[in-house]
Length: 209
Picture 1 (cartoon, helix red, strand yellow):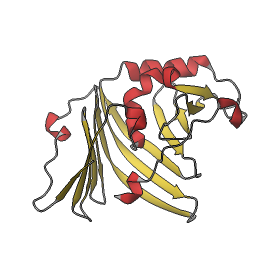
Picture 2: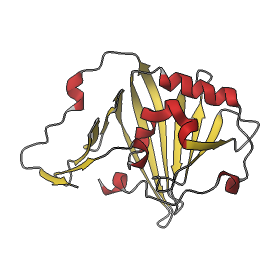
Picture 3: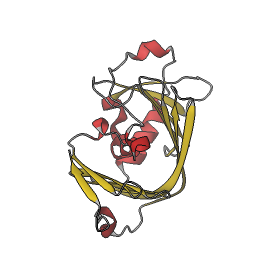
């Protein structure tokens, strides 16, 4: 549980010019925004790699993701961890520690959940300064939060020709990274509404924050 919850930390927003990248292709940005603003739901396989700079250590997780707008998300990891967002609360369950941490939230961009970015990806120009690290790769975008207190220093995403995000990397102030690769992506499908509720096993400790 701690490995996921600490994957992102709050930091002071840095200016876009600090990274020395070029101006992005507006058509690429528009394609990403159009794709996600029109998206109602999706399911995907996720491979997540967390790199901790101070320990020079990488941890790898894989799981199944479901998203349904507005504001619902579930990510089941193969190691027994579950992240659930139901539109009002975020739940973090760890089978190993037999605990559920429950948090109330009002802003996806301040949540320590990397995949929650996809819920608001239809409006990235509202929330981020956007650059292109390599002009030869216009579909690789670097995003810097406009607001202070965001849960990331910067984010890098790779989009395909339709605007779908295939790879997402988030960098925090300490140089730790969270990389997410999405495969077997299915959009506009039937999703069982019961997925967005979670009943922890008997004996699970529930911690509200």
